[in-house]
Image (cartoon, rainbow, N blue to C red; front, top):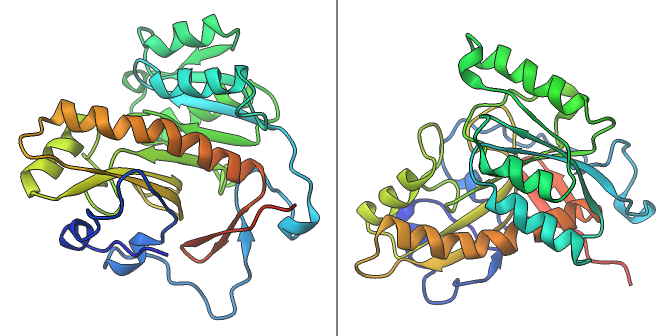
Length: 270
């Protein structure tokens, strides 16, 4: 298991981390006001599992999934293409919610026959009211098992009924370069300016704190001398295309076990 604490600690992994999946609990080593695991706290299986049964006793089933997007929808298109090609069998994307009418992701959804809706932050006076509307949009797609934030640029306050079933992908190795204000090119600019030697992406269960919650996996890339933010972003996105579907496969396969703020990957049944 790899523990990533500060930006300086992250740099130490450059020699062996590129392109590897890192199953981590990186947030644990920083003073970020995390909830500490309780003594003898039972293992929890997060994701589309609604009962407290052991993952070994459950048979993976197709997960009805809604994707929240704000931009062009590259991650959405990647997921839909993998699904169409039979490489993401347990993830059934039943709806897309976009935060603006001009989002390219809406065209991608239409091209794949996926229904969509729009909920604009500027139409509401608070994040809470916007979040309530987003939840209504999600509910309109029916019985939803999993929600994926794939380039969603707004704060979504997760209602209790969706706790443990919202997944986010962030273009850095959380806890580095994460939190409020770290999105898009700002993340990569900050990584370059700080001088880290590696960056990457993180897939984690979201909670009601920016870029926080149990980490499912991370993938790392080198930060090269002379990199621009766009060049680093492109390199990171290539790993996002691998990390997000792999994390969703693990979750849908009921192989992600959560203890406190840590995750453990349950071995695949043979």
